[in-house]
Image (cartoon, rainbow, N blue to C red; front, side, top):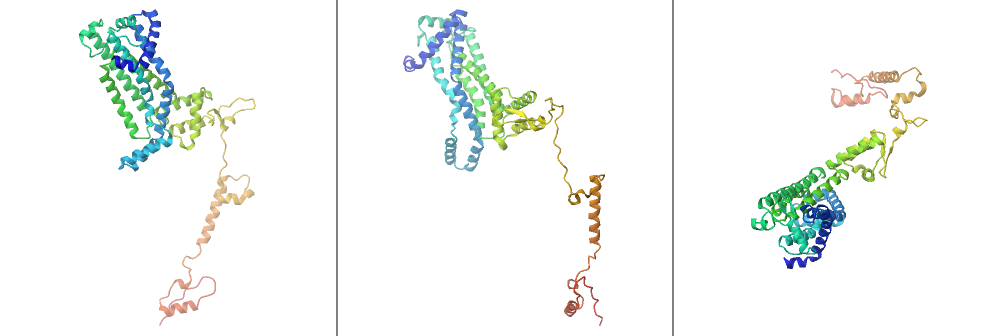
Length: 433
């Protein structure tokens, strides 16, 4: 333990120093030897670390969005090279390189927390082993050993024996009940965090192995926390439970205010945004302008939720601009009176009715009292008359050449020589022998 702690003293010393500083503040309020002072010091350490990791969290969101954008291309590559796994991997790496995305970027917050988790684990193990570590001296070590959270010492584990637990001044039942409850809460919070990501903030129009991987992690992570949690001290369980609750709340905020395009969360967000914009006629926050600006820039590439949002604004007489603002459209502006007061209903532009060919040819000859229906009736009757006159012609009045006589080839030649010039030809009766 001393060798490992000395190798990682560059991180254990700062972590222990931060805990001691918070303990000095909370110790004046709750008492230096209480579990509240030491427990809140660990919670404050988590909050401080997560605030510092917010830039990485933003980068994680952008990486996840980029991966979701590439899902259709990834699916095409998988279908094209489904029989050649090596070529499939090469094309995937090429796609990542061209788009500037990295699949591991979504794991950055977890990877960045690992050193702090490792340092806190060694600090608490040092307290359980009655060893000073970092800036925690003997007096602070004795104070930390006296601290209990709901009857369980900070350095106690679920797997500890009764002798070790009694040395820390607690009972084995209290330790196992408290640790079991914290492990269940830790696993449940992790499961809920991943579940709300999969059910609300994922584009459901695209099905790729990336989604299957995220779905698998939804069940794997809680099991991992439950298995490894029985070997964690109570202080470490406090750390992980706090960071899981922080992640859950942070993700809920992002899903509500900046959802993934095409997800159920985006449909709910655009519904709320539509109600607000139509009621007030303007946007209220910069984030709303950013989302509207992105929707307008997509043009024909909008999904069904974004098209519904634009149509709802149009029906309300509003138009979304390229800069993310919303202004009144032409239909709404036409209802303003000279005094600047809007009327109750929006004036609609009247489109002229399309005229028939006969109406366009007749022009102004139509009487002023004639209705369009009368004109159409007259034109229809004239067309019918013309068609009847053409139909009076005999349908069988064709040249004799087209009706061969029964007299054979000589009859055909005589019929052709006796044809009249011009006009319909009279058929000749066959000669009688």
